[in-house]
Image (cartoon, rainbow over all chains, first blue to last red; front, side, top):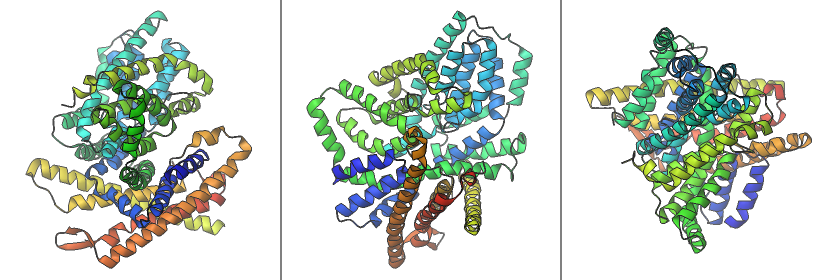
Length: 419
Length: 166
């Protein structure tokens, strides 16, 4: 039965049918084949109301969108520039760190390139960074920071894979930091070889930028620190952040108006949440069917006949994930994770380690030619043709792939933080 | 047709209103719960299931709005690569398929809700007041009906009308 349905679903997907209709329709069809009433799909969907950590998704998305619509990105950028601008390659490193933070806090939904890219592009060009480097850097930054809490893909992965969100948050910190360092080193050498001008360091500018961002500086410490110290859970952190951001952006900075802007942003953020929930809700029944039909076990048995080594499996898994993630990332997490987690477990791969591999793949999938989302966003934001961007991201892609290899084959990088 | 679009706009207004109210309530109530736990080491027992159902309602109203503003996840990259003349037929095809799938899912949800009401199941208690499962879960068939409706109207809606107010 599934053999018949799968190609049909794929065909419909390529024709542009929404993912939730394919999964929802597909599971009703599969349930009918197994003589189960279609209302069972809805019983599974109702599990959306019994996942205690699910509230983290709407609250983090809402507060991330609030931050993105306020002037927080400009303040953050000014502060980072005052701090690191004087270093060689400083401005590029500023771009890396601010976009990583911004992406983590806005749920990696593609707003980084739109919101920060437009600010950073002229800054970097004026400093004399080569055009190709600037384009590559800004295209990469669209998904950088996906491994840092509280990014939406981490939360979604943990929910779907049924592992502790806080543990996955901790596991992502070191790989994410290493990636930032590797890219910063590349930026440092590029800046030196192309003779980029320095920005003189100024205590005055630093003081001004710090005063302007005084209310936003504590936020990452409060959220990330609070989770790491065990002060609150991920969903409580989401609630604290939503409340804090609402108060500071509306009452302190007055960037957003409580009746003119906040409702608009609330609705906008719930469009994304609604789209995620539909796929998640319909997929809960679908993946349950696959697990009842012992599909992961069959995949493992079939795969194990050809691939007995854990390493080869990981190489194949990475190749598979890169292709899948290039297509649509949230759906990829929801559909693929429940199938590969049991398969990978049979190969003796820690689910937390698998999570980091998966998320790093996502990060790369965002910028992988020809279909990565970052490329399309950067193309429309910077008015460049796609092939120009394909060439520009080359070196960045290599760094990310090297990092992926490192994270894949040295589980310790991910697991050391999750102990 | 014009009257239909206007009627849909009222519906959209109501959905937006519900989403906004739910988000404000979720932020306030969940933050209160965090404060209660941190400072008084207590909490309101029924607030957690209430919040979880508010998340469901907010998300599904969001899903209805996502149908209105064409925000549901789909593999658009391939459609973008298709020749211009094929795009409109593909769009109509995807919409018709969405309407059909929503109808199917609505029927499944309707059967489920009917059974929930018949069995008189209780989702959770607010103090001693039982909250009927059927009522809190009615958002599921409603969401599929709204998604189907917005998508159906979307087939005829002129293009300039499609952009969201964002």
